[in-house]
Length: 202
Image: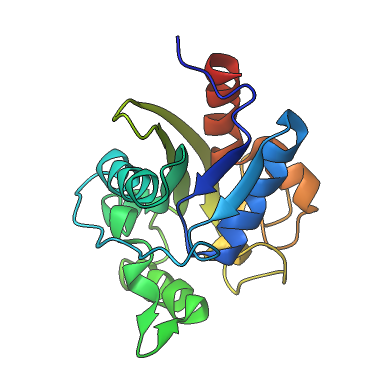
């Protein structure tokens, strides 16, 4: 079975600085040198998939084709029960503004949609992450992780990124935006997916 032992450099197929830092922290203990697609000046492919796996695969294949190195891509998002799983694969789209992404706006959009459903609406939500590793010869492996929790308003904390300041994981009192990053790395959706990746590829 193909593994990532002694792979050396691994391209992280993301232009999201927060996501790259999290993946870097997860990979470093295994002697892998992560390098981002931004550092290699590789383009970000259009995410046309309708599932997390499809989008992660698009990004991984684009990165490995452009670099000639194995690549790791993550597609992740927030799924809110009362919103029928939205924003889901369109998680980043809810933050889109001219010239970039505004995550405070994205969180406000989620809250406004929930508020419109009334005070009895469930605030249960989950973060979902699919990791795909692709090699230049076309082989790929996928791993999924989930973290269940609930949404709070107003957002709390300056740590994390994206929707982290409004998400409280089950069993904890702090949002991902307040939580020590080391703890978040142990319990997050990305950590669960990465744990499965480690078990199989390292």
